Length: 150
Image 1 (cartoon, one colour):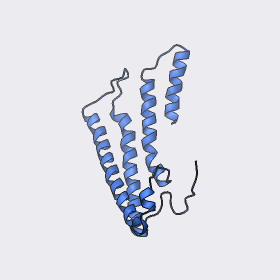
Image 2 (tube, helix red, strand yellow):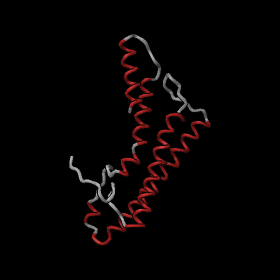
Image 3 (cartoon, rainbow, N blue to C red):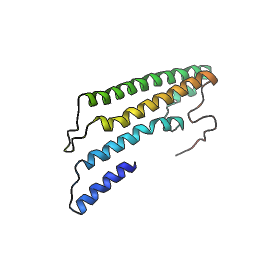
Image 4 (cartoon, one colour):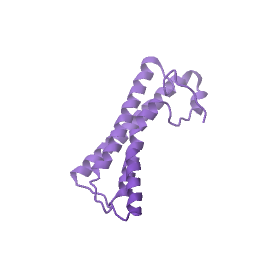
């Protein structure tokens, strides 16, 4: 987020003081995307992701198994996302793919944030999945997570 702020400020000061730094909008976007992807795992561990639990609330005795199924599906989906994110960054590096903007940034550099964020999310889902099988499903954020209303 600080990187986004810095690039936006560079763009603002550039327009104010009549100088131009190429790619400020693109770099701000890269930083914003990286911040979003890198926050996914932490947000999952704190229980801050939006969770639709209407079906789980009425599952009764099947709830632990549905929780495990949901975690297994989420682990699979995040694993695929991580695999293809890393593959995309690797291909961009191999093919010397560059941004179409006027800064011509090698695309593998900003794609590293996405790849790392998705790998961390997969690890967080793996931890939750293993924890659900060891001790039974626990609500996201842990057993002592405070409930909050917004």
